[in-house]
Length: 342
Image (cartoon, rainbow, N blue to C red):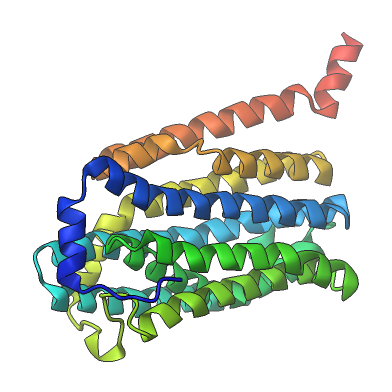
């Protein structure tokens, strides 16, 4: 981790006068590395849980819809504040950048806490709504309970990570995310098999890795590695700032929210046939998300066009649900029986 800390003026000059190709590489490579680590630990998580049972694998996918909701608000608030922070630093308005980062951080933590409370109070009906069968339900409840407890930390971490990226410190953001991801891979087999915690061990490994990522990111802010300051006294009491954050982050919230909705619909469609069908749908959806299948809304978000982003997300939702419904119906036991009678 770099020992030196540059001033906001030096960082502003770096972002303004560094050749664009070099700047793009310096910002994109750490972000790409973070995404690859996320893909790696999601794959490892799925692999280790699959050793327990088919129902356990399906349960991870059911809770994947819940995690998409948490990510929707975390990423959305993070993207919203990141845009404002970047513009504020460019205008040499460090006070507004600090105010935005602080407000977004505590706002995201509060939203995560609300999701946690609401989810825990309605856990069983929520898991059924997201596609749990009676055999999947015990696993999904056990997994979701721990994930919900980590929701405030997850949402706050997304804001800290995006704040670092918004000021041009993508490398620092990578440290926290990659460390947590690699730790998750190491803790999964330990908790699941050695401590015999089952699927709860997988959830605990995920929660602890998120906590470690949060602590690393928070340490960077507390020790002045960031030019933006996050402090309770900087939190804004002006509703307009929170509205602006949500407005800019709205496309991301839509994109992640529709991903959660499509996943829940497909889980329910597959649950009619078997737990194995749910597990298969879940695996495909996870790999689709990790491979960048939702790049179109990302491009449109770059245009900052809210209407087109929402429309593209709805279109992708319709396409994914339609294809999956056709596939499930085409190869279901009922369809096979009908064709054999013909």
